[in-house]
Length: 474
Ligand SMILES: Cc1cc2nc3c(=O)[nH]c(=O)nc-3n(C[C@H](O)[C@H](O)[C@H](O)COP(=O)(O)O)c2cc1C
Image (cartoon, rainbow, N blue to C red; front, side):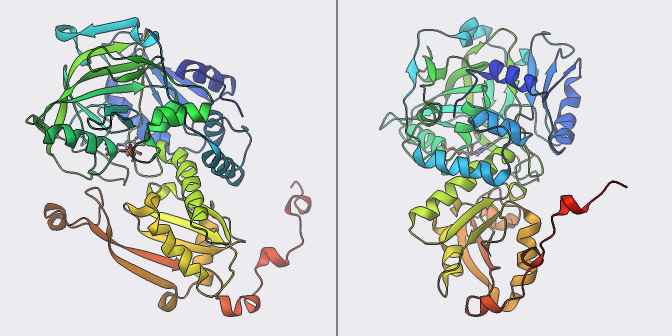
């Protein structure tokens, strides 16, 4: 396994060689949101590089749909390009289980410093930044972004994708869901009445970016994770304003501070649930003191859409593999596979297949899913199926639900589980009162253990026909 690119530009060359890159020139910025929304849902959608926006420096570009095909996901993570979904998720499980951490390597300079603007010269309006959804509160520069913060007590660095609204030429929003690692870092600074130093990257290669949307444990820097994945340290430069590490090959980056007593209205924004989730409210923001960018920089656009959107397509593999590994570590036997469906933002719908070993096994697995840290936040439905069901195929999973479950006896409900402000089913009152609880259903869609041998034989068990041999032209 080898990662065949050093940065986003080399990744684009590879994708172009695969015939999966499309370019469009001269598109008006106000049309970019619609293009993103319509192209992301196409099957095997190509990566889309938008160039030469009217009214902007012709070199400034936006890239969409990086994870739009299984081939590009395989390329990005260094796996064989022609894998099917089940084979690919098995690669992820193995890699995540075996990988070690490798800290970043500091270098004195890099392409990110090809252009540096500080103080009065900072002007974020120079970048073409779309308003991604018609009812967004404004343009968002940070969607495919990496927000870098340092723990003020322990000194470890976190990297997370937290959206950034472009408030004006020198300030950007800084929305982080409560509990996310960057949120905890920022809270620690604010509780000591200190400004929180921040660096944000707005374009990087998709593997490095993926690090910031993987839920690495508390205390683990995502750069160490991606270095370990690559088998080679991520090269970083030291930001001159904050001292934070910034990837040397990044496309665009900023540095600045967020202050405890300074807030601006943020949102609304189209979110991963497929709704304008959070209403307009006051959030901290970042006062940008320096901006860096490569010549002809590329902004990575990954606006959330009705799921599954671009991020979900890659996260299906990552989150499913993490969940599978966590379930295995619990020591429960017979776990065959696990899948976090993109249609639920990789959170709301999970399926696990098992080879049933004893009475109660399937319920144990269903409950175990929600006891893993990975699946705790904003879950909704877990479906447990037998080993003959391909969990990566929604049709197969639903067929099992429809034919092997009995609503009166097959569903367990958990109440007062962890939800959050983005949950569309929480009433406005509950959101206002901070009652972030939801319920969960565990659907046992396995054949009843005590008579599973007598369960009707499924057609693909009885059929010996080879479809391709039986179909003739005309
Ligand atoms: C495209 C995209 C946008 C996201 N936007 C936000 C956001 O605005 N705020 C947030 O808290 N999490 C957001 N997330 C989720 C976090 O990035 C993700 O849960 C990450 O693992 C959190 O990192 P942490 O565990 O280091 O805090 C987003 C994820 C993606 C893929």
